[in-house]
Length: 257
Image (cartoon, rainbow, N blue to C red; front, side):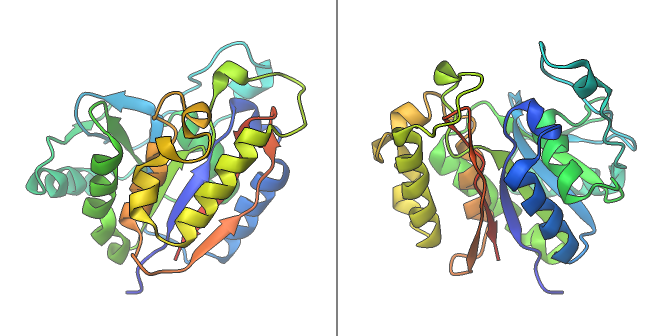
């Protein structure tokens, strides 16, 4: 079986679900041309736990883990099936790799998972698992977790790491359309580092141009390192174009072949 690719996807603000724009249209086209996966495994910074946890429900609920948005957003559902047997096997796999992984049969899919998936697989007909981000992750251990997950690609599982290339919510401004120079600079730096498979640079992102301003906290950047770790070290990288929302929130994504 040809290994599935790995996707780093920007999940944006929750309103992305209603305003897909350039990024959403690109995910729709991507879903139409990707090989159909056996299941999707999503890693999102909106589920952080002490140790790795995996959704084990047969029908994971759609979690609206945000407040203050239009009522229409809270009515959206993404009723994708789960995969309890696969989740149990993955938990065993991770424990054998040295992680203290457990199943969580009550957890649903947060917006970091279901918002991009509703464009990638709008029929919600592909089984979805979500893996939490352990609270102890740093850049090196994020990359290592991705490497531990890499063999799943050969089993027909699409790994989707959901985050954002820039994520300084202290500078979030509703209605701002002009991209901030610092956000564009960091986005450009990340794009080239990803294309070069430059592990050392990607791990040292805080010393990249405007790295500390682009990511005051690491949670939305670490999924990129998980995706890069799960990817083939010399594979092609396709840039999935996206806009810069609110002047500072990059919607650029990457497909690791």
